[in-house]
Image (cartoon, rainbow, N blue to C red; front, side):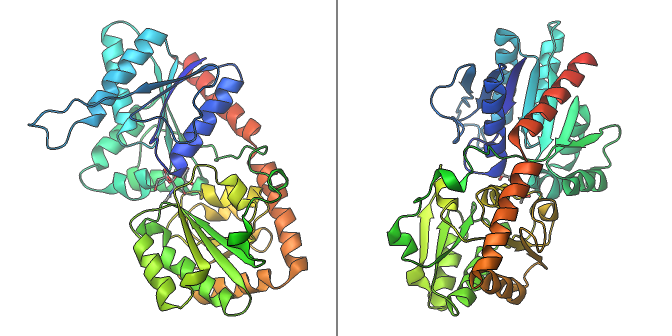
Length: 377
Ligand code: GMT
């Protein structure tokens, strides 16, 4: 098949999933065309059967808000026409699914066609899509897609609840990990001693938006730090980073908290961690939690959204009510001060992630979905 993939190319779970999917599809013999404004961050420079088409948005003094969605639709139309794509797979509904609908309408005018598949990732449904200014176009674009998937059962149900979405059966296809990449054994000495210093390593990876509650991460860490020697490694960047830095200073743990900024390759870092924290406000799936589990790192997270589909409470980590710092801290201390418990949870995490979220199985589900949309064309 020839598949176009559109996603947000910068840091974030939806871009990571879209890119890993494209790479896996190309490895299975498909031709994959990424259509977006920048080379996706997890895409290496060259791979057989993988192409990148940059969307350029024309600037004009009248445009206070340059219309990216229109430029994207034009590029989608051009790439489908010139490369004879079968499917356009949009990751994150806004504005990608809308641009794909426009591109498909333009193609139909000239007697050709393409199937549009939309994967819902999270805030496109739970937050942004429900804003008054985006609600109707989000609903319309979902309903006009030839197939719609959600990354968790929670997100599927939330889509039905919030949008009604007549006639749009939303299929759940979970996110996945590449077991070769997210493997603790592959990076035995991944964390430099300058970071580890013989202590327990607590880690958090995100885009540091408010929804991630990074202050809670620091609070939980401070409780651990009070009981056992520990280091907190914060990977990523975003608007709440200054808040997290301030919290670390207030709690007097700033010398043991390291902010590494945005990094592409997180598997080596995760492989050196003892605990991953994700106390988010909402999380439709929690890809970073899955990547941690696959590296044998138990996860403590909030009991929200799709996280219970990823973390098995009491087996591969713990889920506690949103904002319950005391419960999360108690679990973190219990884990990091009991080697036998850590070993048990670490192995369970690794096995469970590899069994339930194996790349091959998930990629096959997407292939089957594409094929079904083509049959019904
Ligand atoms: O929806 C977002 O906030 C953005 C998106 C992203 O690009 O990181 O995150 C969502 O998609 C990820 C990949 O499917 C999920 O792992 C995240 O849980 C989800 N984020 C939220 O639901 C907040």
